[in-house]
Image 1 (cartoon, helix red, strand yellow):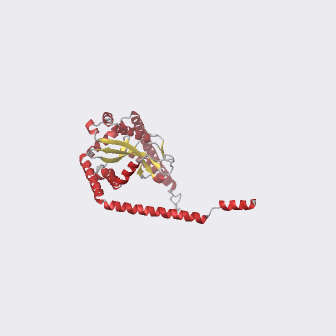
Image 2 (image 1 turned 180 degrees about the vertical axis):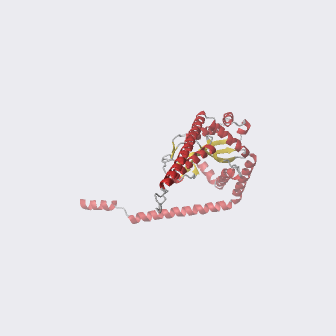
Image 3 (image 1 turned 60 degrees about the vertical axis):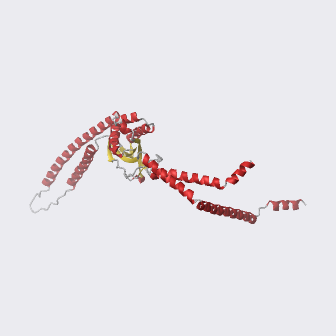
Amino acid sequence: MSEINTNKNVRDDEIDLLDLFRRIGRTLILWSNALVKAFLISVVFLLRRWLPLGLSIGAGIGISYFLKSTSASAYTSDLVFRNNLVLMDKVKLRDNSGTTSEIISKINKLHTYCSENNSSALSEAISMKPESVKNISDISAYWIIDDSKDGIPDYVDYKGNHSVYDTINIRMQDRLDVRVKINSAQDLNLVRDGIIKFIEKDSLYQQRNRLRLRQNQELLTRLDFDILQLDSLQKVKYFEETRNMKPASGGQIVFMQEQKTQLVYTDIYSLYTRKQNLESERDLYKGIVTVLSDFSLPTKRDNGVMFYGKSIIPKFFFLTLFILILLANRYHIVEIFKKY
């Protein structure tokens, strides 16, 4: 008797997979039918009320045009600086001086002044008139990212989401991007000069730059001396080799060998290349920073019709749609209120 009860309990506890699949299938069919029905009802509802919905879109466009015409123009432009104070580690591609991050932090102080509407501090920092400073909405500095470490700038990290632990896509240590948002595009040159003055006011940066130029000149002086020494050595070696290669007796053939002389030529050319690089560094990059890419004059304002329309048109559309839904279901809503 106990065996019969045990077998019966086991059979009752078993799951009927076919019945389970049938129930899941019926549920999915009900859900899909409900979704299709809801979609068709929504489409018909929108088609029947196309006029008020269309008027809401038109009203959003009209208000966007009105805001565009009544608000001050806003423009955005970017500037790329070269940091001349970097001490690059060519193996690890890092700046041992850390000046690029310091300059970015320094320029972002101007961003703080702009966000706090501190016109007096911003005017003093970039040496501009207070009335011109009021046209500046923002000044911010960003890292430039080099993908695959090929030495070519790829994009600017405007969102600040680049990982410092990424060893493949790295921050470029010798340059930075400065983005300015301004209401008067004609003042971009004044802003550029003001930012450069703001950076060059730093006494520590001035000392570092003087030290860099002095060391550069010392290297150039030494290279000039080494080039003269090698040139004199070249003449002596050439004279001695030519004299030693004279035949001792008539009829003897001597093969000219220029290997040692060519080695000295290679050393001289190497020194000349280093000298030219130092002269370029001295003559082209005298200041603390150098403009690699200047501000471009914006041709299109930031706060155009699309700028306002992206937020205003959807708001008007969904507000109108919500009102239409309430009107279509007003009797049901009234009954619910009466009931509860």
